[in-house]
Image 1 (spheres, rainbow, N blue to C red):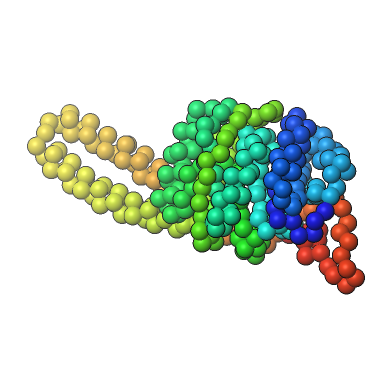
Image 2: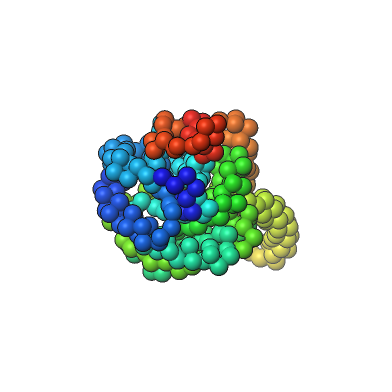
Length: 333
């Protein structure tokens, strides 16, 4: 293995037994064709199928360029990427999903943009294939909300294929946020970000690990982790509701004085029930929003490890006597 490769490819793996063989068959030829020194870092995120065995077998076949990090449990995709970033040796790190929806043959486009001087290269899926219609609609809606609240511009935040300069990787490694969204965090550190259009394909096998709730959860984390706008907007909305309610009651009082008794009773019932339900809903929404921020503080102050590594399988580097591997395996991070 080159101890200082130019390119580090970071791939989180969770129950991808059905697709790994095809991934290996396409990934390594695509990387070999780049004529660039590279390494591939697989992070097994507590898979319950044969994924760990397949990863170890591949490491045995290509030990010079393959490293495998085995988690002791399931800590999530972003924790897996953080673990990969803690071990990269390359000048540029590229993240890639294992499901082949982003073809590894597209990596060269990100490298070309990086060589043009961009320190962070996002990607936009050309045509989303194999995804349910609601995923595309929900993604567009949440992208607009996120951009308005955080000022972070990502056309396609759900695309894993991204490139990060070494400087950005090191800055991400310095952060200790328990819950974060890595592409958004990288965007805040980037000096010259850009995006490129990449091909998209249906999953080669298996099924998506993200449900609608998980996608919603991800966007809540993104907005509450990078902006106070949701709290500020809720405060403003609360003031508007209070003023609107007062004006509505004044208008109803005037109207009752000039209307029939039956209509007066109906209006009294409607304004009591509907307005109460609306205000109760607003209060519950506000409590939930405040709870999001309090929950983030709670998770942060506990200061628990973001992930626990069982072991790192790699070819032992032959450093000169007295030298140390700056990316050596760490059991806790």
